[in-house]
Length: 508
Image (cartoon, rainbow, N blue to C red; front, top):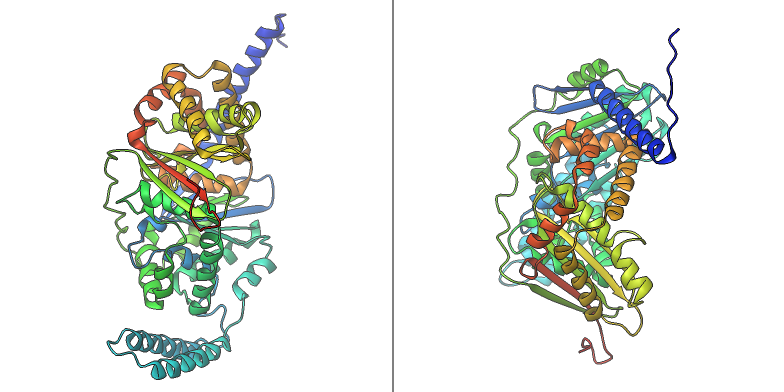
């Protein structure tokens, strides 16, 4: 047996050797994991990505539909989020007591709604006729409820072991997420393929009212979200990132059942979706069942994304929202989309300047000067697929103002342009970010999300394994260069929440 002689080394050298070894082992682990990923594209264009893990008898499923509020046009804003609400209402065989009878009532309900709309939009309004029609409409709506098996779709998943059926809508995408015992693969295939093949958007009018109320509670009664909505509307004059995910109230009130069906038929098609499966599954069996269940969904060309490119900003934009609230400041700067070579450096910039209690802004505004009770920064807002914003937010403390916070934040940004971030700051960012990446890869659900996101947003699932390398590649001069180019007043939108006075006006 050959002996290996281990040299005696001091603490600094030992630490250095340990770090080199840790990085080497992590790279090997990543390479091994990447080699285990399998991919397959169905004849209808749906892409499948599978990572087999045998450590536990469970599997996570992530369906990524490449459609979000950025795909919406005026008149139907909020429709992607509304479709998320309708996602689990069932199909022709799930969620109904008798679909053949139910669809007759649903069609009559839609026809009557169209009649009400025409009556309301007539040159001479007939209020008596409208009242009669609305009464008939409500009677029909209640009739349609008689055929509904409420939450049957959710209940079936829960019985099969899914602890939390989930879905989410963003500016860029719509996600459908499940976690099930590994031996429930075919159940998931059957249920989910049926959802995209035979959706029935039952309880549409009821659920639309839920979303309307959600907008009222989340936006119209929450001053900070009013501010966010107006900042986005000001920062983006052309690109659809100017719309919030929840949509405009007038659009929500007028979106029709037909709008939802047409939108679903255009965007929720195989060529516009990616499925990532991570867990104790056999990739070949996943692909076999995908062929059986999902290849029956009609294909079509991938729909075109937004044509509009946000033009260059010509000067600082400012927006004020007056409300019964404490003052709040938001400063947003335009930056390129996620595929830009400097994407990771923007992330480092946001982190070092304003994320966490050890960040520059928190230490300066909250701890030292005590002019703010909260301060932070966020990157990739409101989405990351297209050119987006890196932003800073501050909530002044009592007897202090947004103007004071603005001056300090602006001064700190200017320092970025003249002095590099310190080695300690960069090391701290890299250490915490890499830990976050590694932790995310441990869980099946977050790993599936990373694979699907990388496939669509970054151009391929392999990019999911490039995170550590990209973090390590960030240099201090990258941050300084980006600050000089992008963190300038002409590229900035400033939003201010102004407390309402007893007279109903903002403070001067």
